[in-house]
Image 1 (cartoon, rainbow, N blue to C red):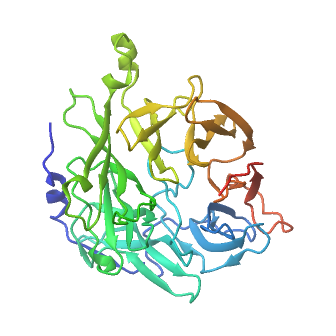
Image 2 (cartoon, helix red, strand yellow):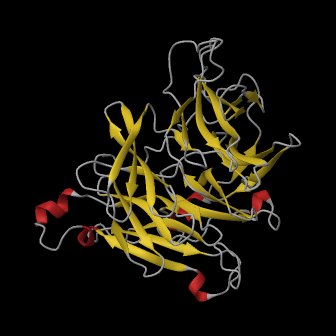
Length: 422
């Protein structure tokens, strides 16, 4: 049965919700946490600056607190930027690339000055119950100022309590992010940073409430055309229980009135995914398709993304590319093992990960013939490639042991051995 545009929202709107400060001492919004031993932490969510000189990350402790840090490219001198804060006791922070939905992430502004990050935001209902959500804030590395990027209004009437996955536009004028509900509903938000207040961000209209994985188009070298980047994102269309869902890639351009600047650019169904000669039993083994992790080539002509018939089985993930020139998409990864977390190495080669027991193999993949080359292995899919693709910084899994005092951070570096021409 098809749901109305905001049928669920109407029910939620019957309860007025406010965004207020954390509860005072003595209230029991969450069970008391055990004391956190000194030195017991794990550094997660590493993100390189665009110039490759620094890495931002979060230091996580078992009591659900996180602290924003900055470290140089050699992981030698970590610097705490903010105090340790409770982030979200009811929702796990997922920064790993081994995920079918948009990751929780830090995001550097194009000029490497601002870091977008999540903060806890409390909602109070009329019956006194409280719910911890998340909002988005920015830290200015030059001035040390912290400002809100996307927060909920004082009286909130919608269902999207969690803001996460911030992505800056190439010119820094817009911030796209995902708004998520407590039952997994997801919608896309786009805030004009200079023209809209942080509490005025609203989800983009989405009748299916299943949109995520947004990526901005890079600036292309076309001086005669307006340099206005579009935003591509995934949207799943689920109409009825008897009709298989459809995975789509959509594009929109904020502020544009041109009809061709927005709309669907590609779609695929379960029936389209399998060969026409496949048996019905083969088709039914794939419950639902899932698009994810879109990334643009440096020249902005090709979009790489993952496509899988089983979101929880990473041995079945495939890498696909969509070409702007003809609007066609095709699988580029070889069959037999799963590949995910694509990054571009030039305009015709992808870097990616593949699950290998408890570790992750790092591959390069040629998009023209599907040839793969093993670079080595890393211990976590919570990672980020340096802009020159020569190194990968990755986070270790949470440990029960106190961190080694001789190591300034629990992050690690992997040298790829690549030499990417500029």
